[in-house]
Image (tube, rainbow, N blue to C red; front, top):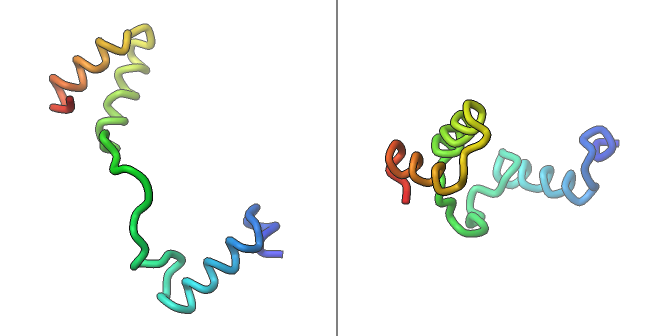
Length: 74
């Protein structure tokens, strides 16, 4: 019933319950992060989003130039 209410599979519910029993939280604090580290921070993405809202016709090179000059990201 929990998996239906949460709209996830039963395995996810069991994993969350197991982690809560073991660590007192829904995630494993000792698990390594997966994937490649992000190049852009949340602030960088917010900046790009605000620029595109103001001017949706910008080209990628113009976005890159603005990001480099205002947020110091290559």
